[in-house]
Image 1 (tube, rainbow, N blue to C red):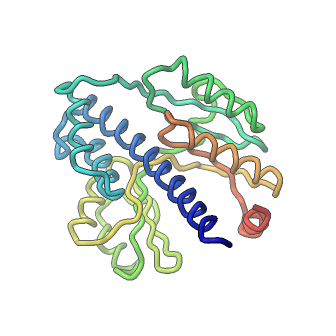
Image 2: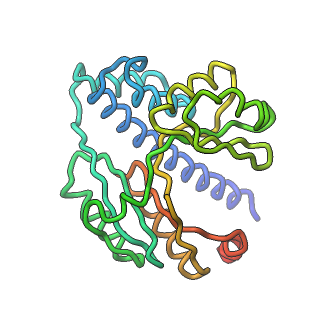
Image 3: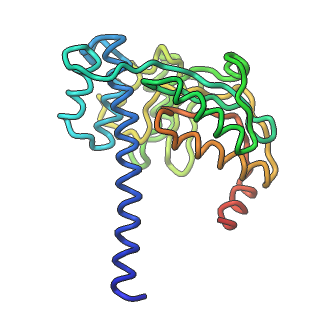
Length: 251
């Protein structure tokens, strides 16, 4: 490979990473803005804002960007007004999919979501058609090498914890949404580094997929996540390690 071609490849990869980082920043800024609008600009008194700010800092967002988003949401700066919309539908194999969006123009967002579903083996459904299949939970993952499952269980005995599991030293905690902030503050106060700390939607049941349907469903979810207005995409597909390996090898 010539030096020129190598440099072009590096630039292309860097450009893709920068674009992905920029898209992530945009999504986080939207979340901070609407959190501040709904609950006020003080993170200590606004759990949703505190979570959004923590995510921003974990992704190395400049403080100026964070402060500006908070002020915009609180109304001390002029800016775009966002609304929250949840889209629900089905993917290949009957998989349930929910897409949470923040948008300043639902007439743009709705057709984009519907088209993405329909072009990739899914269909957009009515509000409430799959939401009942998910539960709102806190999800926290402690980076490996800091503690063990027994210590975490003892630490969280008095909290509303659904499950604590360990895989290759990574400890995952699933808890009630109401206890999420207390547990998160406790763990960070103890100095633990967290790779994930969020309130999410966890499926109550899952749908196993064969290789073809799994590849289609993963592609649909990926494209929904890439939509500018999409904040989070939830699904209940179940893909075995064997099928996941086959899909990875085929890419």
